[in-house]
Structure formats: structure tokens, C-alpha cells
Length: 294
Image (cartoon, rainbow, N blue to C red; front, side):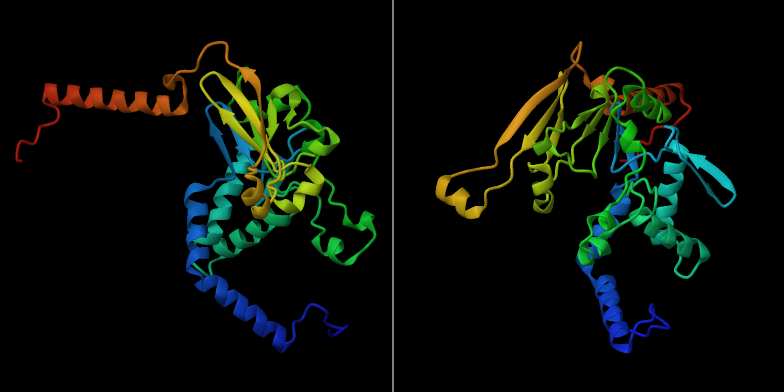
């Protein structure tokens, strides 16, 4: 390393980076995964009265929505999340070499590990410190204030309202931060308004969480959360026929059974029925001529 230019790579290091870059660009499987992520994924999803998100909706220390000023415009909450989703797509879809794509790539990097990012949700990433520094205070990754407030039902309702969700059976469904079940932490927060279903399925987190994650089941009558115990291993499974142990808990029951017509899919089906009825009326009135040339 050159002390005067510590960030410059040697010729050998540049060669390694070039090889890695080429491997990533030429990997058919990786490109297929990225295309799937961009075509099916989003920064958040509203579905059947629930707000699904990975990390957080960034908040300030006094419990308000954190504002971001980019390009001279100030955005908070849902407006900022929508902007972040659109901008992240510029890093992939815009033409190479354009200013829009370069900005999208920088923004995508910030989303991954930047301060107050709605995907990262922490002040800083301390991967380097955890790897090379024994002092645990240097390894801290302070969380966004969102995680101080998401136990408050009023705050959860405020966040749900920001995304147009109201009612007794609306929830925020969170990932990202493993639940420390071994210390008695519950995945159900905010008086049942928020659910953390990332219990630590990855083995690396199981010493912290004590379990192997959660599954949320949503039916027509209730919400059920299932906790999973760590997999004992192939040898134990084959020797003792020991599968993953699960514990299922119903934590919320509907007053009346939910029908398909009350779901998001039901709304789409009603719209299709309405469109078909209008088309039928158009044929009957002669506004649309039927094609008999078969």
C-alpha cells in the first residue's frame, strides 16, 4: 500500500477487480436473478391491508418521518419510498454512461449501506470493524429511530396511514433485524400492529436469535405466526428421523371470515367483471362490432 495514495489499487489488485467484474457481468444465473429482482421486487408492498417492507420507514429521533432533500425536492415517508424505488431502477434500466444511470448506481449503493437508508436502517456498516477490530464499541451499528418507536401502536398506525392503510387488521410486516427469541423478545410489536418475521433463518444469526426464523400465515379467519427451530443437520435427520421443529401461534382472529371479494385479488376480479359487462353492453348496443370472421 502506498501511504500517500492509500485508496489506489496495485496492478495485481486491479487485475483481480477486473476479473471479478467480468465474472459478475457474464454470469447467466446472476443476471437472471437480477432481472427477477427488478421485475418482481419493490422497495415495499401493500397487500391485503398489510405493509410489507424489509428494514424501515426512516424516522427522526423525535418520532417524525425523516425527510430527504434530493435535487432540490424534499420527500418523506411513502413519497420518498416511491422515489427510491424508481431511482434504484435507473441503475439497471437506463442507458450505460448516462448521468441518470450513474446517479441511480450511486443511489443503489446508498440504499445498500448508507446512513438512514430504508433498506439498511442503520447509521453505518461496521463489517470492516467486526473483522479487524476487537473493541466491540467500534463494531456498533446504531439503528434508525424507527426501531425505537415501532413498539408504539400509535406510531404503527401513523405509518400505516401514510401508506393508505386503516383498520383493525392492518399490519406492518418487517424483516431485516433478527428477533432475539433466546432473550424473550417477541416478533409481535406495537400491540400486534407490527410483525418481525426475520427471526434469523441463516445459521450465522442463530446464536443471536436462538431460533431459525418465523413464517407468517394469513388465512380467511386468522393470522398465525410459526417459529422454526434450527435444523439439526443431515446426519441427525437421517439417523433419528428428526425434522425441523415448529411452534404455531394464532395471534389475531377475524370477527368475520374474510371472503375473496374483500381481498386485493377480489378487487381486481370485480374490475374485470365490470369491464366485461361494459364490453357486453357495447356489443349489444352496436358501439363495438362483433367479428364473425372465424
